[in-house]
Image (cartoon, rainbow, N blue to C red):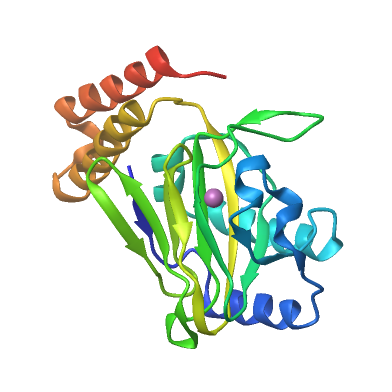
Length: 226
Ligand code: NI
Protein backbone atom coordinates (compact mmCIF):
# COMPACT_ATOMS: atom_id res chain seq x y z
CA UNK A 1 0.00 0.00 0.00
CA UNK A 2 1.21 3.44 -0.92
CA UNK A 3 -0.48 6.13 1.15
CA UNK A 4 -0.36 9.93 1.06
CA UNK A 5 -1.11 11.59 4.41
CA UNK A 6 -1.64 15.35 4.42
CA UNK A 7 -0.66 18.05 6.89
CA UNK A 8 1.59 16.11 9.24
CA UNK A 9 3.41 19.34 10.06
CA UNK A 10 1.80 22.73 10.63
CA UNK A 11 2.94 25.87 8.77
CA UNK A 12 4.61 27.06 12.01
CA UNK A 13 6.52 23.79 12.41
CA UNK A 14 7.63 23.89 8.77
CA UNK A 15 8.90 27.45 9.20
CA UNK A 16 10.74 26.46 12.40
CA UNK A 17 12.37 23.45 10.72
CA UNK A 18 13.28 25.53 7.69
CA UNK A 19 14.94 28.11 9.94
CA UNK A 20 16.94 25.46 11.83
CA UNK A 21 18.04 23.80 8.60
CA UNK A 22 19.48 27.05 7.21
CA UNK A 23 22.28 26.73 9.79
CA UNK A 24 22.68 22.99 9.34
CA UNK A 25 25.76 21.25 8.06
CA UNK A 26 24.85 18.62 5.46
CA UNK A 27 27.32 15.86 4.54
CA UNK A 28 27.53 13.30 1.74
CA UNK A 29 24.42 11.10 1.92
CA UNK A 30 26.35 7.91 1.19
CA UNK A 31 27.09 7.60 4.95
CA UNK A 32 23.85 5.63 5.39
CA UNK A 33 23.82 3.86 2.01
CA UNK A 34 24.19 0.11 1.66
CA UNK A 35 26.61 -1.47 -0.81
CA UNK A 36 24.15 -1.45 -3.72
CA UNK A 37 22.82 2.08 -3.05
CA UNK A 38 26.22 3.76 -2.77
CA UNK A 39 26.78 3.68 -6.50
CA UNK A 40 23.47 5.43 -7.31
CA UNK A 41 23.09 7.78 -4.33
CA UNK A 42 23.99 11.44 -4.80
CA UNK A 43 22.54 13.69 -2.10
CA UNK A 44 23.30 15.38 1.21
CA UNK A 45 22.25 14.41 4.75
CA UNK A 46 22.46 15.58 8.32
CA UNK A 47 24.60 13.10 10.27
CA UNK A 48 22.50 10.76 12.40
CA UNK A 49 24.37 11.74 15.57
CA UNK A 50 24.00 15.49 15.13
CA UNK A 51 22.05 17.25 17.91
CA UNK A 52 20.07 19.09 15.25
CA UNK A 53 18.95 15.84 13.58
CA UNK A 54 17.83 14.55 16.99
CA UNK A 55 15.93 17.74 17.76
CA UNK A 56 14.20 17.79 14.38
CA UNK A 57 13.54 14.05 14.62
CA UNK A 58 11.76 14.50 17.97
CA UNK A 59 9.60 17.22 16.44
CA UNK A 60 8.60 14.89 13.59
CA UNK A 61 7.88 11.98 15.97
CA UNK A 62 5.65 14.25 18.09
CA UNK A 63 3.78 15.30 14.94
CA UNK A 64 3.25 11.65 13.94
CA UNK A 65 1.74 10.92 17.35
CA UNK A 66 -0.95 13.51 16.66
CA UNK A 67 -2.00 11.69 13.51
CA UNK A 68 -4.31 8.68 14.05
CA UNK A 69 -4.38 7.95 10.30
CA UNK A 70 -0.63 7.38 10.37
CA UNK A 71 -0.89 4.94 13.29
CA UNK A 72 -3.82 3.17 11.64
CA UNK A 73 -1.89 2.67 8.39
CA UNK A 74 1.56 1.85 9.78
CA UNK A 75 0.81 0.14 13.12
CA UNK A 76 4.38 0.99 14.11
CA UNK A 77 6.36 -1.36 16.33
CA UNK A 78 9.60 0.62 16.07
CA UNK A 79 10.43 3.86 14.26
CA UNK A 80 14.01 4.48 13.16
CA UNK A 81 15.14 7.97 14.25
CA UNK A 82 14.13 10.31 11.41
CA UNK A 83 16.88 11.46 9.04
CA UNK A 84 17.04 14.60 6.91
CA UNK A 85 18.33 14.93 3.38
CA UNK A 86 18.76 17.55 0.71
CA UNK A 87 19.05 17.23 -3.05
CA UNK A 88 20.73 20.30 -4.51
CA UNK A 89 20.45 21.02 -8.24
CA UNK A 90 21.93 18.12 -10.19
CA UNK A 91 21.50 15.57 -7.37
CA UNK A 92 19.33 12.45 -7.45
CA UNK A 93 19.15 8.88 -6.22
CA UNK A 94 18.95 6.01 -8.73
CA UNK A 95 16.90 2.84 -8.46
CA UNK A 96 17.37 0.92 -5.21
CA UNK A 97 15.63 -1.11 -2.53
CA UNK A 98 16.15 0.05 1.06
CA UNK A 99 18.22 -2.11 3.41
CA UNK A 100 16.13 -4.80 5.11
CA UNK A 101 17.70 -4.21 8.52
CA UNK A 102 18.74 -0.94 10.16
CA UNK A 103 20.65 -0.18 13.36
CA UNK A 104 23.79 -1.88 14.68
CA UNK A 105 23.17 -2.09 18.43
CA UNK A 106 19.38 -2.60 18.23
CA UNK A 107 18.69 -3.91 14.73
CA UNK A 108 15.17 -3.59 13.37
CA UNK A 109 13.46 -4.87 10.23
CA UNK A 110 12.38 -2.15 7.81
CA UNK A 111 8.80 -2.93 6.72
CA UNK A 112 7.82 0.61 5.73
CA UNK A 113 9.60 3.64 4.32
CA UNK A 114 8.39 7.20 4.81
CA UNK A 115 9.29 10.44 3.05
CA UNK A 116 8.01 13.62 4.67
CA UNK A 117 8.36 16.52 2.25
CA UNK A 118 9.80 19.73 3.73
CA UNK A 119 10.30 21.83 0.57
CA UNK A 120 7.41 23.44 -1.30
CA UNK A 121 6.95 21.75 -4.71
CA UNK A 122 7.26 25.14 -6.46
CA UNK A 123 10.73 25.67 -4.99
CA UNK A 124 12.34 22.93 -7.11
CA UNK A 125 11.97 21.07 -10.39
CA UNK A 126 12.55 17.32 -10.64
CA UNK A 127 13.19 15.59 -7.31
CA UNK A 128 10.19 13.29 -7.66
CA UNK A 129 10.12 10.12 -5.59
CA UNK A 130 9.26 7.36 -8.06
CA UNK A 131 8.00 4.11 -6.56
CA UNK A 132 7.44 0.94 -8.58
CA UNK A 133 4.85 -1.60 -7.52
CA UNK A 134 2.70 -4.21 -9.19
CA UNK A 135 0.18 -1.50 -10.15
CA UNK A 136 2.84 0.44 -12.05
CA UNK A 137 5.07 3.38 -11.38
CA UNK A 138 4.02 6.18 -8.97
CA UNK A 139 5.50 9.69 -9.17
CA UNK A 140 5.30 11.38 -5.79
CA UNK A 141 5.93 15.08 -5.20
CA UNK A 142 3.90 16.38 -2.27
CA UNK A 143 3.18 19.71 -0.57
CA UNK A 144 5.53 20.62 2.29
CA UNK A 145 4.33 18.93 5.48
CA UNK A 146 2.76 15.90 3.72
CA UNK A 147 4.19 12.39 3.77
CA UNK A 148 4.09 9.23 1.71
CA UNK A 149 4.17 5.81 3.34
CA UNK A 150 5.19 2.81 1.18
CA UNK A 151 6.59 -0.70 1.55
CA UNK A 152 10.36 -0.61 2.13
CA UNK A 153 10.60 -3.58 -0.23
CA UNK A 154 9.65 -1.40 -3.22
CA UNK A 155 12.11 -0.44 -5.92
CA UNK A 156 12.28 3.38 -5.83
CA UNK A 157 14.36 6.37 -6.90
CA UNK A 158 14.50 10.17 -6.70
CA UNK A 159 14.73 11.87 -10.09
CA UNK A 160 17.48 14.50 -10.46
CA UNK A 161 16.67 17.99 -9.19
CA UNK A 162 17.01 20.38 -12.14
CA UNK A 163 16.26 23.67 -10.29
CA UNK A 164 16.41 24.69 -6.63
CA UNK A 165 16.79 22.20 -3.79
CA UNK A 166 14.57 19.52 -2.30
CA UNK A 167 14.75 18.93 1.46
CA UNK A 168 12.93 16.05 3.12
CA UNK A 169 12.76 13.94 6.24
CA UNK A 170 12.83 10.17 5.80
CA UNK A 171 12.74 7.14 8.06
CA UNK A 172 11.88 3.47 8.28
CA UNK A 173 9.57 1.52 10.51
CA UNK A 174 9.11 -1.99 11.72
CA UNK A 175 5.39 -2.62 11.83
CA UNK A 176 3.46 -4.79 14.28
CA UNK A 177 2.02 -6.29 11.08
CA UNK A 178 4.82 -7.49 8.84
CA UNK A 179 2.72 -8.32 5.79
CA UNK A 180 1.65 -5.41 3.60
CA UNK A 181 -1.62 -7.06 2.48
CA UNK A 182 -2.68 -7.76 6.08
CA UNK A 183 -1.78 -4.22 7.10
CA UNK A 184 -3.94 -2.92 4.27
CA UNK A 185 -6.95 -4.98 5.39
CA UNK A 186 -6.62 -3.69 8.96
CA UNK A 187 -6.26 -0.10 7.74
CA UNK A 188 -9.38 -0.32 5.54
CA UNK A 189 -11.37 -1.92 8.33
CA UNK A 190 -10.25 0.66 10.89
CA UNK A 191 -11.05 3.57 8.58
CA UNK A 192 -14.47 2.07 7.73
CA UNK A 193 -15.28 1.71 11.45
CA UNK A 194 -14.23 5.32 12.10
CA UNK A 195 -16.42 6.45 9.17
CA UNK A 196 -19.41 4.49 10.49
CA UNK A 197 -19.00 6.02 13.94
CA UNK A 198 -19.39 9.41 12.31
CA UNK A 199 -22.49 8.53 10.31
CA UNK A 200 -24.46 6.04 12.43
CA UNK A 201 -26.66 7.58 15.16
CA UNK A 202 -25.83 6.41 18.68
CA UNK A 203 -22.88 4.57 17.22
CA UNK A 204 -21.23 3.72 20.54
CA UNK A 205 -24.21 1.54 21.45
CA UNK A 206 -24.69 0.03 18.01
CA UNK A 207 -24.29 -3.78 18.39
CA UNK A 208 -23.10 -4.35 14.80
CA UNK A 209 -20.44 -1.68 15.15
CA UNK A 210 -19.32 -3.21 18.43
CA UNK A 211 -19.06 -6.57 16.71
CA UNK A 212 -17.11 -5.09 13.82
CA UNK A 213 -14.69 -3.37 16.24
CA UNK A 214 -14.27 -6.77 17.92
CA UNK A 215 -13.40 -8.32 14.55
CA UNK A 216 -10.75 -5.64 13.97
CA UNK A 217 -9.08 -6.27 17.32
CA UNK A 218 -9.30 -10.02 17.03
CA UNK A 219 -7.79 -9.96 13.53
CA UNK A 220 -5.01 -7.73 14.85
CA UNK A 221 -4.50 -10.20 17.72
CA UNK A 222 -4.14 -13.05 15.19
CA UNK A 223 -1.46 -11.26 13.21
CA UNK A 224 0.37 -8.94 15.59
CA UNK A 225 4.13 -9.35 16.21
CA UNK A 226 5.54 -7.67 19.32
NI1 NI B 1 15.39 4.55 -0.46
